[in-house]
Length: 414
Ligand SMILES: [Zn+2]
Image 1: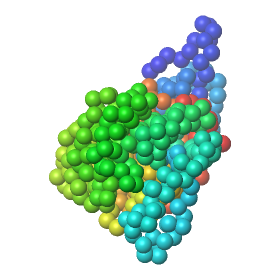
Image 2: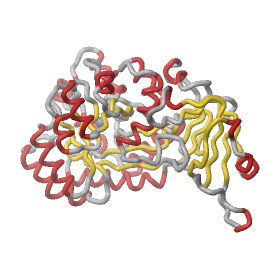
Image 3: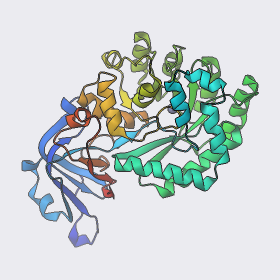
Image 4: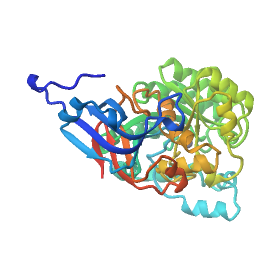
């Protein structure tokens, strides 16, 4: 346990005490029911948790030294949500396309009509930097209000090298306007620019885009699926990205079974996301590679069709994350409470598995082991919920109110 700051030395370190927690879900590994501790308390110093446990065991010195005391009012406390998959920076709305799909037009037919990703690419190119920043900051604020304390943000709607680097610059500027830490991911293979030769595009990504983005994005992602990019094309880009120090991610096995999961396992990718069509063999390979499976119930609900077999993946030993896939085409939400509810309702997770996937799982999918759980030494990123237990998140279909969101020990919402 980190020592409390000594008043005699004049160090200012604020000591935060959260007491009267009805249920504290630590989400620490190997514990049942998301590590739930009833009638708990938590102490943080300088943005990091130093102690948490049953309120009756709270050391008297910590209580005396507290400079800020928050009464959780008997509410449930969970780690802040880590949303490991978003396309937060984008222009335009695709509500009309959503309506057309509901009237029977397929996602791929929509793409042939100039809708889909291409329509967001056009709207993004037409929008000013300031318009895109205001829209993205608004989405991040909405995410904060619903308990998200870390956000991954992808490029992808720039499509061409210049457009992609513009989006990367916007993600960098966005950091100054939001409360959360943003983790930047370059998504160079999202859709083929119209009329472009496939090989020439892949070559431009490898020779220009990746080197220019080196050190500015932590991860490199590709859309490896039917109608997008082949496993061969993705492998070429991902191998080049790995050589430049990017962590690897794939959108894979969403629309069809293509071998994307096996490719992810072979390359030691940090995560493979979607996984609707993943088989048992894929899950076994991903589990042994330590590749996190990021499940995206918003997109699955919006597009319909096959659901990922989450129970099979857990049985194979995979670590799972839940994320919003926040994007204008297939999941226009930033609400992780809803993802927890859908993880249970659509994918068959238990409430505890779903909460863990939305917190610790998301942190694993971003290689952020300092968060996603609550315990000594972890970041004090947490949410105080207006409900008695984590089960309510699923039971009330995501409708649980957020009393407070803390990022790094500082209350940022409301
Ligand atoms: Zn996505």
